[in-house]
Length: 328
Ligand SMILES: O=C(O)CCC(=O)C(=O)O
Image (cartoon, rainbow, N blue to C red; front, side):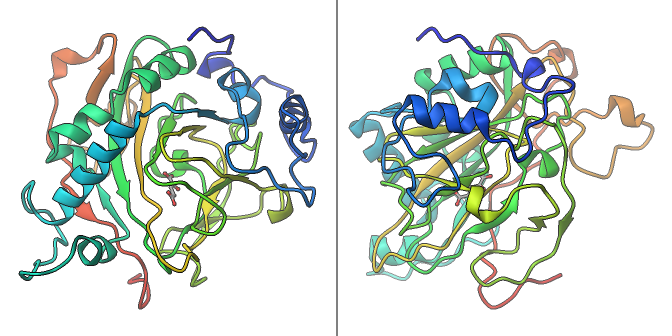
């Protein structure tokens, strides 16, 4: 795949204002025959969002990035993790004999960092179609710092508006998520919603706690110059990969389907040439400017900081769903 895209360091240019003018998203939509965001006609399942327009839109969709066989393997691996067959993790529930696969999966909204106990999921962070696109978006040297396996069965909540860069501070504009749809993702079962172009200014918007029962305990971003009417649902068939920039405002709504899962395997990537000033406390004696989180996976190219070695700092864990309230 050869695509003509600006690299991450050029995604936002001084003076290029991405606010209420939604031209980029509108022109991408027009080019593909879709309605503009903010109009009553919403993009439909499988709408084209080309990787070539990533710099303008802040997101893109790779069609059929994952084969049907790989999808089966990824779903089976997620189940094995939830059954405890890949080892224990914080929040793992006992599985009494006779518990069906569906019952096991329904117990969880999401498992964080499952790649640490599953070789297959560690491999899935390196799917060729994804790495090929990432190299063109980020550059040749890429590392990853986290993975998440979302299950989101019916009635499970979504995540409020947020920017991943708020949680994972790369500050170099290279943070990119690859969100692999393991089921068809629709407005009914809680697909991603994005605010196209909201990444371009490189602003981290204010955040606050929220207690909206549509969402888990994720803090919500607010006071940004877009409204919910500007949001675009990213409805994609299973096997699609949604790529999105770390500054892009996005959210997902609850799974309102009557039955069934909206699974997604998500990994976050950044340039391996940048330090990653993530996770406190900063080790004693380390200058803030040199703090570098080293629990990383090298995904492509070289790691200029390999001389530091890597560390095991994160452990797989269940993401709290917020059902029954958020402990603050
Ligand atoms: O899959 C979802 O529902 C939300 C994913 C998300 O917000 C993220 O990966 O940052």
